[in-house]
Length: 574
Image 1 (cartoon, rainbow, N blue to C red):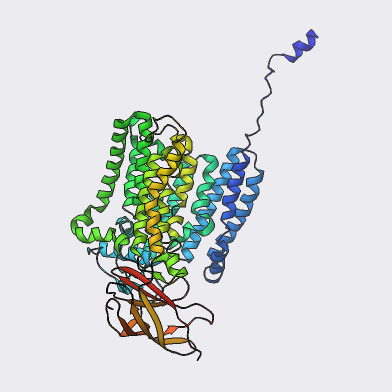
Image 2 (cartoon, helix red, strand yellow):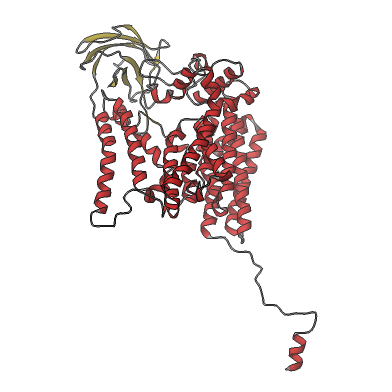
């Protein structure tokens, strides 16, 4: 035995305890997230490949390689053994998504009204001309670019966003005509924002960035349409990631200063960040007050708001100095332009379920009141609502006159970024009013009563808008048409309202709105309780009739007050 022990511990062969060299396995939910991000890249890719196979075979070949990458990543996500290996798969999925987004940009860059307006604003800026207050109707003639009709019977042809998007588009004007430079800018911003979000998230969660920004063919579509909101989204990414930690210890530091500057730049890119900023500032104050006290928390928020305001002012200074009034009206245009009802929110009641309303203004009031009520609730119950700070502001748009789903969709990556990096634990010690009072049997009812009290004005306003009556009663007396087109429409219109109204007529089918008809005969303003006959002509001379069975709606908008009156149009058999 002694000999055996001596041999086992012979010099040159020291004994060591066995240590496993196997890599640490990833969690199953990490594998699932990677796989979901990988699968999301399939959505919309076939459409891009089909177009490329016809017009750009080289791009089609790249997409085919991306298909192979998606398949291989799907296998690797389920079989790799180590966390580092799965992180490399996440990177491969990201690169595949970026490549597919670039392929889609190469093929689909026709753009939208927002891209052509942004590109034109950049051209005017380079030429030394004013950006705001100048209509450019020729941008929309015969090229399929959508118009934004207003209740005044006209259309909005002017640039109505803060100036950062044209400033960043100006260096790209060499790319071509139309909205292509603006599309390149917004697509580039999306790709950079995706990479930044991917890098800032904890390693196991990085596939969330790929899935939210590039998967589902959702956000990337808005990038290819050239929306300035995509630039704002990219700038908000570093702001939202770990936002409750801004000012921790009473100092902003370089990271906090950068986040504040990005917030100001985002507000200088598009108006949507304006609605998010109050929630973030209120949340930072509540968290820091719970840590540092009221005075120190106030100083942190003042420094944060000051840096953001400075960045915003630096971007806007040239325009404030060169055309102050036009600039102010321009950046406020989406709030004041009086665009017609459109969207998937409550306005659908007046658009599709009833014949209109004489209280359309109350939709706007309801939206503002809901935003104010939600902000007040956020302050009162920040410990519970803090994680939802990036989602709450968009609820207000569901009541607005323009409640398009893009207002929600384009900001959804921020929802996920906050869900990962700003969990409820970050708000456990946040200050909120009345927390010093001991819990009692009436505490929960009091909270419910506060919520009802703060939200009831918005609910009442929305109810007023949705239950309004159409002020104009219409009867179709004559229709001139053939099998395929309508050329004249004669109506008998009665104003049942107590105010004189200036009507603007159009026909719609589905959710879109056809351009306004010309009034060949009939008074421009119809007095209260008066009746008149109107003869209408389509703007292009004829109106293409839909297939039999499709609903045609006559819609009449007025601006002062804002009203909508609708009626079905039944065409007599030819």
